[in-house]
Each structure stands twice: as structure tokens, then as C-alpha cells.
Length: 405
Image 1 (cartoon, rainbow, N blue to C red):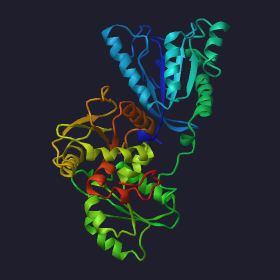
Image 2 (cartoon, rainbow, N blue to C red):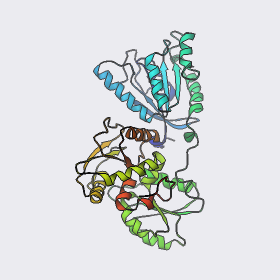
Image 3 (cartoon, helix red, strand yellow):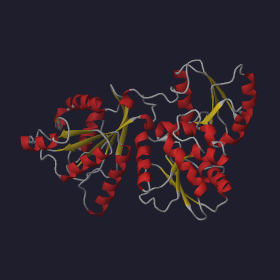
Image 4 (cartoon, rainbow, N blue to C red):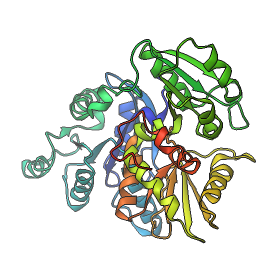
């Protein structure tokens, strides 16, 4: 469990006013002094995250946030950082004290409700003063039975919250879907093409490759791993044609030439586009590449920050393929990490990475923001396949609504 990537963990955000007891709640839940606790309002300035195993749910990330009633210039910046956590929250805990809810908590609840994020309510500091029935009924009008607690409750609060978290936990986390379980069947042969180039981490595979490999083994498939330079030999040595070939998107061009047309071909990035986002939306977004004009801005979003190399896929290879496909002078703008541009109107297209380091809720949130701004969005693998003229083939293994390239 300790090795589970953050992107695959249930994200539980803790929200409320300053000094409501958010940090104390986090420390109690994880049984460690993670967040600084003080009677001074506004002690928590930046979101504090703690990844842990939270049985019976398994791997989760708890996120402690700044107070939503913070004031001043710095306070507004803290509130903005808290709001950014909304995009990757799977379950929200709204905590208050004996005074109950007012407009701050109600607006929080409405925001989460609009995003279809389950909400749990906690009424803290019951050892100081108990909440009256009128205020309690006001909370119950929005959420299920609030958990009444205090710092002295200790582990009691953990058991109460566990029960409620399990009750509202998304079904796809309780029973996570297989990455390729609906595509392959036991005893199928699958070939993974994994280039060992400058971007390959020394001595290990990248996360999407590892997760796909494990998923195929879980589905009782026979898996062959090779580099693109040995792919022809590998295919010749296999007695019968493989059910599927999965390649790193950067090797699409050479791999597509070496894999016979009667064998399904896709990429790790396209598989993750389906798993982490909306494959249909990404597929439709790729068509915007053909509509790009001179001096258009294309936003490229990376989920993680990494050392850029001379042949970087985002900064070198994708711009090269797009410029070759369009013949246009395109400006490429880059954005990394959890922050996301507020103003999307200046861009003609957004190209997202495979999002192996980001949870699905955050990617879906970004897709919705793009739809609201009427901005086409696609992902690395789909954009590359489109530029190379093989997109229809690359999405054939999946159920795409429109398969006309």
C-alpha cells in the first residue's frame, strides 16, 4: 500500500473555516502530527497532504486546507489554493464547530454538489460547547447525519468517519475497473513495445508501463516486452499473431509500420486517456489540430514536473509533429503540476499528458473547464497518432462513438 501512486489513491479533502479543527482532524485520522495545530486562526497556509493506508478502504490521500473564511491579500491567495484542491477531491469533509453552518459552509456544499463530490459533515469542539438542535437540523438539511466530535474523541472519530467514508465512497474505487479487462481475455498474447531512450528512467520502467503490465498479468495474458528495434523479430518468433500491441506513443511511427494491419495497435498514452479521462472527448479534440492557424497558441499540460531532455516529448517531439502536420507557425505554452490556467480563451487547443500522476477526477474537471471555455482538448498519444495519420487504427480496440478520422 505504501508504494501505491498518489494518482491511484482516494483523495479526501478537509474543508472549513479557520480554526474549525481541520488540522486536528487530519492529525487524528492519520495518528501523526502532520499539520500544525494552533489557536491562532489561519495557521494552515498551504494544503497539507498525507498519503496512508486507511483500512478498510486501502490507499488514500488526506488533504488539509486553509480556512475558506481567510482574509486579506494573503488570505485570498490561501483560499485560491484551497479551491484548486476541489479539482482532485473524491470525498469532501466539511468541518465546523458548535456554531454550525453559515454561508461559507453552504457555498462549499453547493460547489461539491455541483461537482457530484460526496460530502461528509463533522461538528467539532463538542467538548467546549454542544451544537444546538436548530443548527444541527440546518446541517442535516444538506448532508447525512453529521459526526459530532472533539479533540478528546481520539480514535472514536476515526471509526465514525471510516463508516461514513465507506458508505459514500465511489464504486469504482471500492471495485476499481481493470485497465484492459474489457479488451483482452485470459491466454491472449500482448506485446508491449517499450523504448529504452533518453526519457526512460535508469533501471526501471515508467508508471503507465508497469500498471499496464500488471493489469495484463492479472487478466492472465501472455505478455512479451520488447524494444521497437527488436519488434519485427519478436512478432516473427511468436507462433500466432498477438491480440494487441501496445507501444510508447513516441515510437508510433516505426511500430505502426512493423505491426501488420490485422493486429490491433494502440499506445500506453491512449490507454490512460481512456482510464483517466474521456477518450471520446480526447478523440474529438484531436481534429482541432487540422484547424490550427498561424500564431495560434497550443497549451500543453503535464501532470508532473520532470527534468527536460534535448528530445523531450512535450517540448520537442509533439511540436515537431504538429508543425509538420499543419505547416503552421504555432506557439506552444507549457503548464505543469496541479495548477491549471484560469483563462483558457487565449488557446486554440489543449494537449494533456497521459496523467499517470493525476487522479481521474482532476482530469475530468479539466475537461469540463475546457468544454465551458469551448476549447478542444486531446492527449499526447491521440495527438501523435492523428499527426501520423494512424489515429483510426490506434483507437480501434476501444468503443469510440465516431471512428471517422
